[in-house]
Image (cartoon, rainbow, N blue to C red; front, top):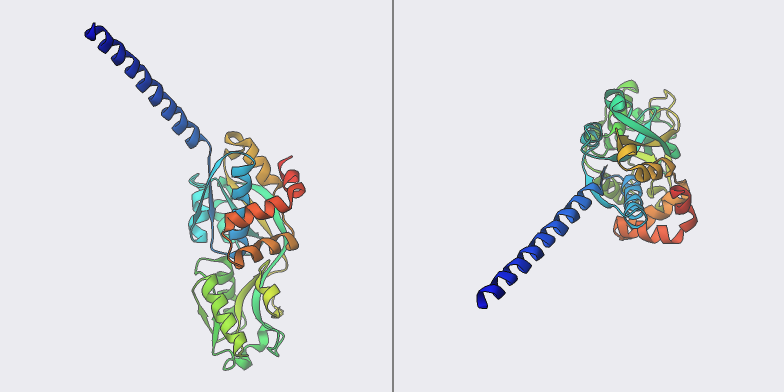
Length: 288
């Protein structure tokens, strides 16, 4: 009698174990199928648009998002090689031209995310010169330095070219966006002259009175647009994600609101969720 009950218990336990293994296996399979990998760079607008995209893809489309920060060069390569699904901050036709020339055929361009972006040398409004070609005669006031960001950024390559073309005996300081902002804030507090590699959209223009120096040689180009690129095959593997990314567009006001939330201390995804809740109609238009 005890033996029969033992056999029954063993059979029941075995069936439960097989069922549990099957559920776990299906769960792991489902999770792996539903993960979206986004590469991003530590730039204000890219942190912001990745944060809101992550919130929408998770909350509205039901995927898990893995957002990974890296330098811009490796992000381009990772999308081209299929390690990342998308990158949401490609500046064209000037800033990221060299990267797109290299990997453009290996990725899909999903179109413009933002229109009318601009890069150049930015100074506080109290700096009395108006043009880059006036910097040479004012080297001492600028301490012979231009404060830049990470070395691989397209704006750094363009600024190195500008230094050469304008004959500036200035040192281009490599660092990060955060370090550049810290130096800018400190200089403004002391009412000192400073030149930084700058771009719009960016929240710093809302916080301080800043201006772009004129670029008569056209080294920095005119207004640029920000594009989204994705790995080949994303539109077939995750068509709803691809459709959203192709529809995903923000204007200066929308992006500024999002950047301000993050700059005030909110986590990017938290800010993205708050923004999403406050702009349901806009989000619906991206998902339709």
